[in-house]
Image 1 (cartoon, one colour):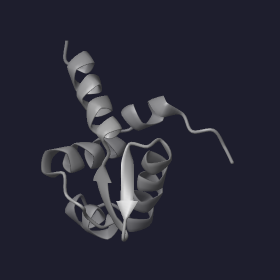
Image 2 (spheres, rainbow, N blue to C red):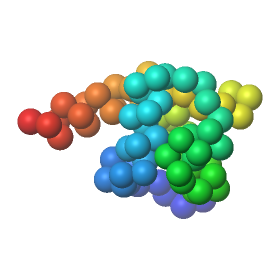
Image 3 (cartoon, one colour):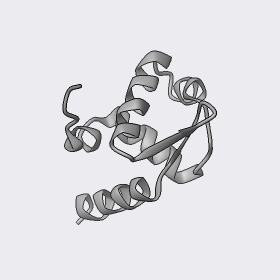
Amino acid sequence: MTSINWDKAFVDARYLTIMYYLAKYNPSIEAVKIAKKFDMNPDDVQRRLKTLENLMIVEEKNHKYTLTDKGLMSLYNFHINFNK
């Protein structure tokens, strides 16, 4: 298994789009619906969600995703520090 770079999730706009969407609405939503909402490739969204899941930023239950507490706090800290 390859090592996951934590910073990758906070540099790539597609990761951030997914995280901000989940943070704003905090839904339990399927990857395909996220892909459709942002006109992204469903496989790409699934791959990104899997990376975020491995970082414990999102969790999956019954093929639906939501941010974890760690994910919410990480995104909040990123937002605060980025917008200084």
